[in-house]
Picture 1 (cartoon, rainbow, N blue to C red):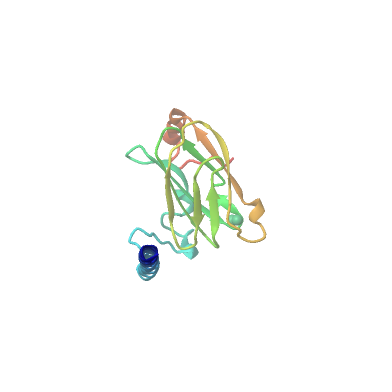
Picture 2 (picture 1 turned 120 degrees about the vertical axis):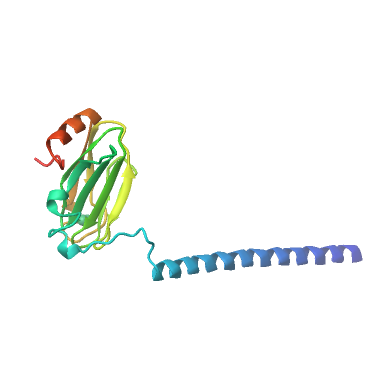
Length: 184
Ligand code: CUA
């Protein structure tokens, strides 16, 4: 009888200790999350790139003549585009197969989304910020790119297309024009 109650007391203490450990872990995680939120809120990461949505069309990276796809000196491809109520510019993006592709985009007005159907490519386009994402396409084809963030009454109609063309065909097109798109 005495034996039993002692062992019960021991189990209680052990359970209490473990409960304290769980609480300590929880407190630590909440602490880390709070610190991270405050830290990043107070000091934006150095890799965040900003733009001015009011002057996008006047100069800089997202001026209209600089939008579309271009081959970089290292052979990779950069695609620049902007989202605005209620379209993408360019509305048809062309990319090559088997090539590292970097999307760089921003919004000229409100928050839009950029998603390429059937892929894991999914970006938010936030006015004032440059969204950047690397991708690679294996097979040629055509895909839809809907805006996937509600951006007011015309949201449902905000669609674009992505044409994935053979790497060699892309190189031939790029030899003729500095910036490529498939807008007809
Ligand atoms: Cu743009 Cu929804």
